[in-house]
Image (cartoon, rainbow, N blue to C red; front, top):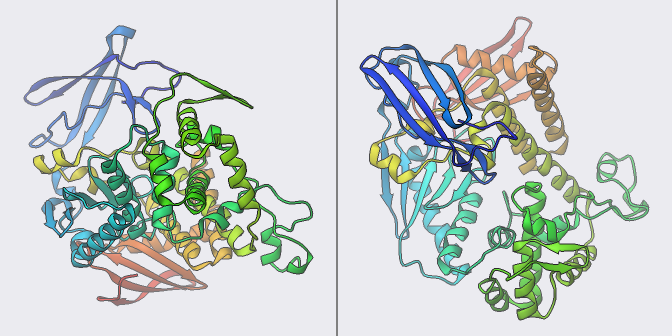
Length: 520
């Protein structure tokens, strides 16, 4: 139950009554702050066991006694035999490697690809441990999720990484896995305060990129303000301006270090992570790994607010500032000045600047899709229940069930296609696909009812996905080119088929099905 802003309900009771065939059930929960974003919500986790109940409508009575509020909600319980595969036969399983305990759900892509995943886990863990200079004394626990949550990875009590064929957030789960492994090993090495900017920057730096391998400082330089007389990267790539006429313009997206330090997760995600990684890279290259690690492990809460030019430092910035003075003899502002000077020495290339721009645009679109059509996946408030409890109780529905209406599937395969374009440097394709997705999202947000009729590319994807669904297929990846299409699909299990389609005067038709294609 989510509190609407600006309500202040933290610590307030909410009562929920359920009338079922065996009698009335009374439930109670407290509102608290949930997720990275601190959303106010009251959560009744696995509070109502509906097994054995007759399908149909059930009334819930909800009240907040201290605020004299009460209302009713009606939930519809669907028949158990309508649960989509693989859930009816799915269960938790675990495999042990040299380094790790790997949890997954049977009948999913992780189950299908388990041998390769176990090799990947060992290789990535060994690499992360070598970089961090640590020998783990306890197994690392990793769960492969058959669902996109956030940007595809979380590290807490255990590591969670999204692994599925229609992964619309990233096609590089090995990069996400390495990133989260760095977080896990980092936490084992300790430190009183590990500021978010530095811990995330460290994970990206040691992984060699955020969502893909990438040169960190050259990309961070693309965030700087445009220099006088520069040329836009899009004009250079489109041939509208000759490259010999001048330097490439920066994007003017740079975030000042002090506010970024204290508001890291609420700042623009890709920009913040890129700046953080470039800053860590600069510090390590300037003073060495041992000096950086000694500084990073020796950050402590500031005893009182600090005043610097430009205003008061927040808690994390103040703590970092004290550690910088103690270890390097510089302030946080001096560190930023030195880092900026190094970035300004980088030579910008139009392909790199355009890749940074589209990468930000892509993930902004992913998050917009999640907030509108899959809010449980949005990173600030993602639904990530306790894995150990789920396994003990044999619960799999939280990860196997997700929005699966045609509009969800269409937009997700379009996001998969846009991600493929980013990986391949096909900027024109990425631009047009993201424009189409956002046109649909605009229409859905406005409630016009014409979401997939206002954009031709989105309409073609909708027609192909609808045909596949009508034929009993679950689409995971769809590629359109002129009047032909290829679709990687599944039916009742995780195995993939390649479906070929053509567009005729009567619409799209399936021309061939290949049962055992290579994975896309």
